[in-house]
Image (tube, rainbow, N blue to C red; front, top):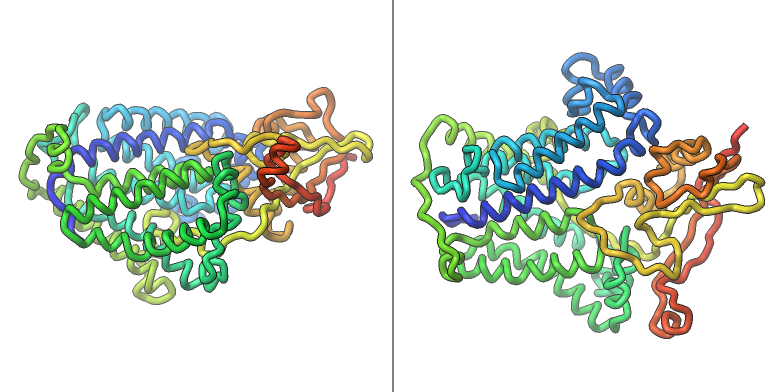
Length: 476
């Protein structure tokens, strides 16, 4: 893999966008973290850290749960963590002290990821952690470096970010082939994709109405794009520019038809590093010549660290269970050398868990969601890069047995107590006057309506009640 010189503008754009992505991540958590892991949240972080300390006393506990919340895990500490993360990421977006602020943003986000337990089990968190870590070596020095021409992008850092970009695309293609999922083999994977992802959009409804031939062509195009197009990274600069022009529309289309939080925004802006300053000069955007690469102790140390990270990603992919895989295991809790692969197996149905409360055991009132499908008349929205982790987790929980998602019952218990921090995860509290005496969960199946149904009824969704999900809690 080769990386051309002259990435001043590409670096500048990437770091500003990365700052914006960090802002979205911290802003999302600002509205959720107390309900998820606060002192009265679904999975209180204080109890979690105490359990970790029991099995891993001393400094080893930081490796198991890498978070600054070891210094204090109360609600005030959670607020301070999010406020600090927002400040650092905003400063990064404004290009103020980028080397420091990208490092702080990464450390503070790690502190959230390391404490969120079941609510941080997404590949996107690892992608952002890896990008933030490597960008600490990419960012220019100085408080207001502008383009940073005197401190050009390190080729090793550019390489590692493009290596992450390559692994996301190619890894996603490989897992589709290795999974043996019949939908990818028969080119039917996209036939119901738009209605079966965690948070569909109204544009996805229209895409779903297209004929099978179009969906089959898109499925084949995705396989070709993920398995073959990333290799254009190895070709001369014109091919890399063409590669950027090919993959960018895909990410835009995904952003419009599904809400995958900041995932696709990150993959999109990683692709900006395929472009060099000669391209920007050609389109009328001047870029100064970069200074020669510095040969300093910092430069050699940076290259050594990034080389170690590169080997850790190789070890994670090929040697995870052997003695050669120890570097990957060593950094595993820090989420900076993960193996990526999206949509290996496509879901065939859209299930939704709904919380309901009652005061008499006969009349059941649903708790309204902010983002998930619920009211068949309400069009699905576009919320990304905002990430409603609670609602995302409910989608994953709906695909398995209740025993695998005990946190759903913990949520029921918090609703039974009318816990304000957990209620804020919902769009409203139907029991604001007095707490319910009973709370239960039920499982629905949802699927998009067709044109005729939509014209006749105005519904975006069809739905069918399948029955209880995780049982019922009763207040004594």
